[in-house]
Image (cartoon, rainbow, N blue to C red; front, side, top):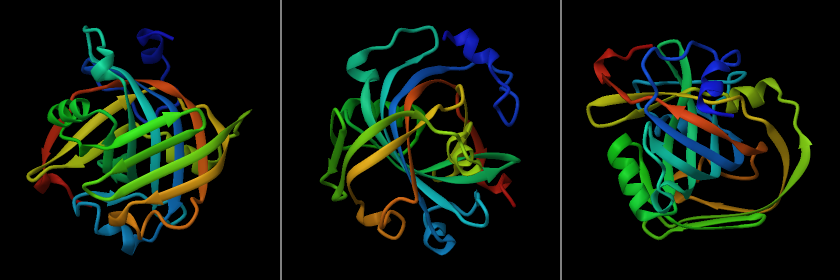
Length: 245
């Protein structure tokens, strides 16, 4: 499916596309979703006070998403695989602001040092380099600075999963909000709805000392998706004093 087709497929979106032209193209492929139900008390310390934590049936959630970023590029330019293709892990929670539901990243790891530096410089998202290794049915990462370790062994079911209300709530997010010292950066994104499959987690080791109160025990639910083609708009900076809920 080409970009025009993606832009014309909007019935699944909770609000209209931005009027401005998109700025970046990227693909999020071979995505593993691990989701934990957490407590509000444990989560609040990680989310800026300007953003309201979104709840599903009164409970907040945190997700770890491990995937392969591919073909990331500015509009009108080709991708450059040595930089545009890399393994990525993000740890995110769910927030709402200005009548939009989105995500907030607690952490983003990339498997290439230069790719992380460029992505962080352009987006101001919390990218950091971690050594990653991905092989068939296995995803591993290690960050010596934070002593973070991740090891997943998995099998993918061929059967597509019928999405529950919770599945939709966790996966269909078309905005993200990230804080800097003085502003909140808002990003709009667009892609087709995720087609998710069942995944069998054969072995899982999630050891992130900073998030040990959040990523503990087994995930409450898991998904796998082959991927989506994503259009992203440029960030909008908003002064923190303009946020209230």
